[in-house]
Image (tube, rainbow, N blue to C red; front, side, top):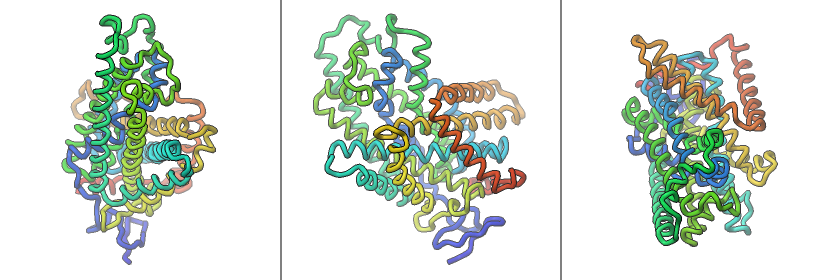
Length: 473
C-alpha cells in the first residue's frame, strides 16, 4: 500500500497511482502510426454505413454514395483540427484538455462531460446490437446472457493493456477486410453477369437527374455523417503513441479518408446490385439482403461480420472512454478513482472495469427505456449528441489557439475551425427532439455536479497543467 498525492487530493490504492505523481507509472508509449490508423479505422468501422444503408438510400433518393462523399469532405476540417490540437496538447484528455486550456476550464469540463456520454454509449450500443444479433442466431440462449458475455469479452481485451488491444484490433480488422473483399468480388460478378441498361446504370448511384434534389442530398448527408463518428478517439491515445505531435494528425486524417473511400465503394457496389428503384424487404437489414442477392451465403457471412465489427468498435470505444476518464480524473475534474494507473499493465484499470459494468447494466436497461426492441436508435442519436458537442469544442479551441493567439494570422487557421464548427452546429441542431431531451438532461447533471464541486464554479474544477506536464514528459 502506498500514498500518492496530486496537490490537495490523496488516493491510496494497491499497485496504482496518479500519473502526475513523481516517478509513478505512466501510460505506455507503445503505438506507432500503423497502430493508430488501425485503431481509428476499427473504431469508426470499415463497414460503418452498412447498418443504416437502407435508410440512407431512402432519405437520399438513391444517392447514398454521393452523401457519404459529401459527408467525408464536410468532416475533414474537424479531423484536421483534432490532429492540429493534438500537436499542441498530446494528452489523453483530448477535447476536454484542448477546450480547458485554450478557452476556459469550465467549458473544458462541459466539453469533456459531453464526450463522456458519447464514449460511454458507443460501446454500449455496440454490445446491445451484438447481443441481440447473437440471440437471433441462437434463440435458445437469452439476450441477457449474450450481453454479459460480450461485455465481459470487451472488458477483458481492454484491461490487458494497450498492445493486447492493438493486436486484437489487427485481427478483427483483417477479418473485416476479408469480408469486404469477398463482397466486392461477389458484387462485381453479379453486375457483370446480369443485364443493365446503358452507361447511366453505373453513374446513377452518384447522380440520378430524375431524383436529384439539393434538399434531399443535404438531408441524406446529415445521416451519412454517422459514417465518420468515432475518429476523434485517436486523440485519446496521444500519450500512448510515439511521436504524437506528428502521428495523431496523420492517423486522424487517414482514418477519415480510408473509411470514407471504403464506405463509398461499399455503398456504390450495393446500389449496383440492388438499384434504389427497388424497395428493400427491410430497411434496417437492407445491406444483408443486398449481400444475399450478390451471393446467397453472404447473408450469414455479412451478419456475422457486422457482429464482429461492432464487437471491435465496443473494444476500441471502451479503450477510448477509459483514457478520457483518466484524463479528467488526473486533472481533478472527476474523483481521483478515475485518475489511477495500474502499474502492471500501465492502463487505467479502474476506468476499464467501471465502463464494463456500465455497459452490462446499460445493455439490460436501455432497450426497455428506449421503447423499442433494441435501444440502438436512441443510443446512436445520443452518441451523436455528445460527439458533436466535442467536435464544436475542438473547432472553437483550434480557432483560439491557431488563429486568435497566433503571431502570424493565416487564413487557413480561420477557415478550417469556422467551417468545422458551423457544420457540427447544424448537425447538432437537427438531432431528434428525444435525443436532445436525454442529452440536455445528461449535460444538466454534469454541470450541476461541477457547480457543486466548485461552489458555483468559483474555484477551478480541473488542473489542466497536470495533463500538459505529464503528456510532455
